[in-house]
Image (cartoon, helix red, strand yellow):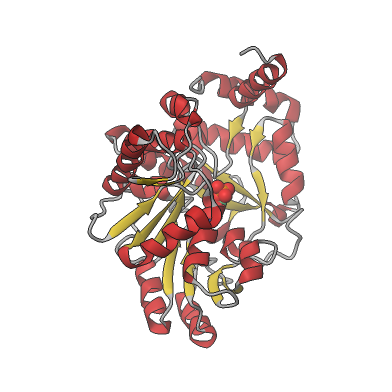
Length: 406
Ligand SMILES: *Cc1c(COP(=O)(O)O)cnc(C)c1O
């Protein structure tokens, strides 16, 4: 690279990633092949429109590419082309969700979704998101004791509010979501069921989390979290919703699709269909469960008492430490994660009571049971303010033992 300034920053970031332990639940390390597709000449092409109906010339190869990626998406999630369509053009998860709501829910109507502080996502109608300005969010949460979704309460809220759409899936909920129950509730009130599987798509692909497709009308997902692809998103829709969604994605909200990004999604979808990925997905969940259990053993409170997925929340305030203090201290020692609200949090989002811990990235690096036990010890030691400097050294040593793909 001739650009010295960017090259320097790139090298610094490579070193940062190599020398730290990444427990951010929404991050992962993509393969070299994914990066090769992202950095390919596909970046040069304008392809407004859809396969067979483009506004620019020169799209024969691009058409073949987009069709192949759609076919791979269907194959990975075992979908029949008679029932399901896939739009692979959304630039990322937020525009994908906005496109679905825009296409199917009249402005001002109600969208029922898990509230952000209970584990939901901004784009599901939170007031600071444009989705919360165009539609009215009807929030649901978790039971105070079990900290799991209370489906009886969910039905109760839905019956009163009569939302047009119910959203399942969030960004900080550790447990299996009962899509079947949610389908029944959606049917009872005549709402669409949207499953946003952004966080657990890779677990579904790997067969360790149940598939939302038998129950949902629409499924959205990012491709860069557990699915381990480039930053992008897909919208899966039952046939009847496809034309409206297609028109909103393009020309409604976007211009030319990022074909290099779509090529990279194709590579990731192929990788996610391999036996190695199945094994990866199983180890992601296993690692999360070991890490949670070890932290619990060291006296830390895990929200909902454990996890069925790739992430969990640690209630650090239960030992008098705020989420921000915890995440700052951990960062100083080379452990990277995010502060997070916990259910019924009495503190503010900027300095909440919890931290979120996820294992997709460390599992990609090849870490397993032994390393999870070590990481639990490091986290505990740092949070209890014992020997941060010393721990920083061992964290870096551990990280160096598991190189990232360059
Ligand atoms: C990450 C995420 C998104 C948004 O994805 P971006 O690509 O960051 O826009 C949407 N929904 C859920 C549930 C997510 O976890």
